[in-house]
Image 1: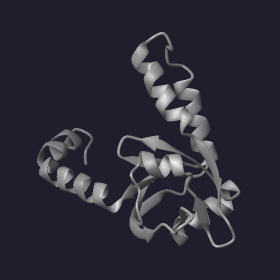
Image 2: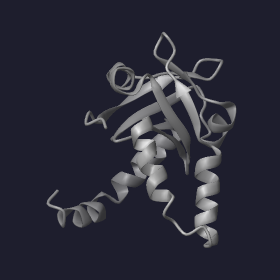
Image 3: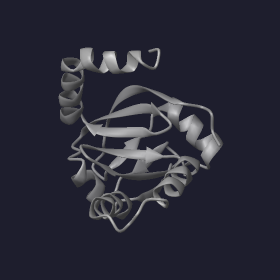
Image 4: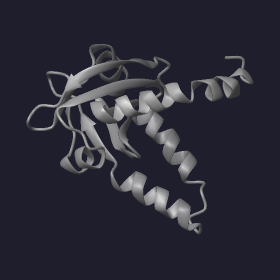
Length: 150
C-alpha cells in the first residue's frame, strides 16, 4: 500500500477528446507505485480517483454495508456504476469517459486536487463555488477540527 500522499491543487485543461494531464507529482506516484492505473468514479459535484490499493479498501468497507437499506443501495448504485479504470498514457494523461465528464459538469478548465489518499477532479466553476462555501464555513469547521488537535 502506498504511503505517498496526494497533495496540492493544480489547474489543468481537458483536451477535445476528454483527456486530462495528471500533475507530474501525482503522475510519479501513480506510475511508480500503481502501474499507471486509477479508478475514477462520480461523487456529488466532482469526480474522485483512487489508486487500485485505495479502491480495494473502499470495496472492502462498502462490502460490509447493508444492501437492504434503500439509501445504501442508492449510494452503491451511484458510486459503483460510474467506476472506470483509467490508465496513464505515455504523455501522463487519462481519458475521462463522457458519462463521468457529464456527471461532474467538466468543461475545458478543471482543478485536480490532491486529497491525501485520493484525487478529486472538479470543474473550475464548481471548485470556485466549493472554495467560497468552505471559506464561509471555515470558523465552524475549525471549531470541529480543534477537537482533533488541528
